[in-house]
Length: 440
Image 1 (cartoon, one colour):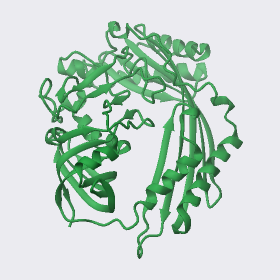
Image 2 (tube, rainbow, N blue to C red; image 1 turned 180 degrees about the vertical axis):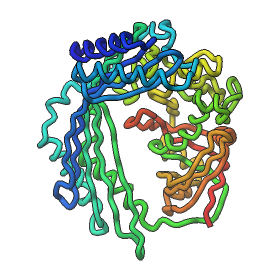
Image 3 (cartoon, one colour; image 1 turned 180 degrees about the horizontal axis):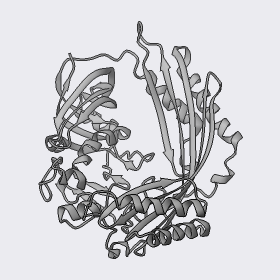
Image 4 (cartoon, rainbow, N blue to C red; image 1 turned 45 degrees about the vertical axis):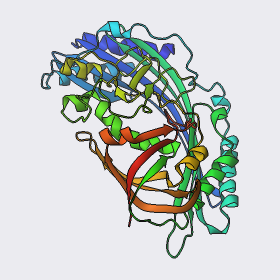
């Protein structure tokens, strides 16, 4: 653990207690961000920023506040915390606000999650520029004469945090991340200018595809939008591409959070133990994925993380209940939110599945839309391809699917063998049958 950050956090805890706080939680975060983008074969944006700050949650006389500062000089910090405690005591009471029972801190796994790239500090400015240039060059080469513009990007960062509470919690994390991608605009028919993109994310540089592949995929995905049109409204099987499943899953997840349940804004509130999806719908929350973008040994409350099956063969098993809402609901807490979400992959590829389906729509992106956490009703715009006789045919766009999550996930008919690894939501492509796709 970083001794300087730990000592400062311990000083903040002691200061808050001395100033009259009953309890407190202190987080000190230090980070670095580097961003480079190229457009028209020259740098468009080069940025580097370093940040360091302290946040403190104060519990005093059944009152609560959370406050932040970037001035970490001890004299300034002492004054800041004293005023923060005093101002907290002026707020309305909320008897449900407290630090967790320390028993939930116990049982933390003792493993290396592999979320810190040991080679990060050796990643040079010239290597960053070379990566972005290679992405752009690949886009331009693969895009050909139809390219109007390309913006290639690379982001990377390092984060370190120390967390302490007045009732015994201590935590320390170090992590890195890399983002590489490109956005492309091409000339379509008439005044149409389709825009596409490709982005990949990893905790380690070695986990990224080559820059040439990143750019080539961006170009391929953008060119695939050329000539996209609506087709007539039809009830069809659909395949949602792996990288886009998380967008649709987000509306479902909204019903699983303690806040929405307590506020009567969850369509899943009374569904625990009940069938809410087909037998193919299993959702696992795994904080211990090595190199996972959501991997963690403890959550925001300091709870030791656990691998959980949230949905098993279509049956809802768990909710995301943090300490505060567990007290308001009178329920046992679990954890405040997702870590790495996984739908276990199936055995067949998308191409193999298409052959059996014959005709349907392969969805490669969503536009706009909304999902109501209270009712479960959802509607979203889509684009992608019609497939016929098991092969992609006409590009489609400006179409829509609408359904209720409690009905939609029962239409899940198969899961692909292609989990998307560049996200904390490692979803494979999903196949749904009997979906009304609205168009002409």
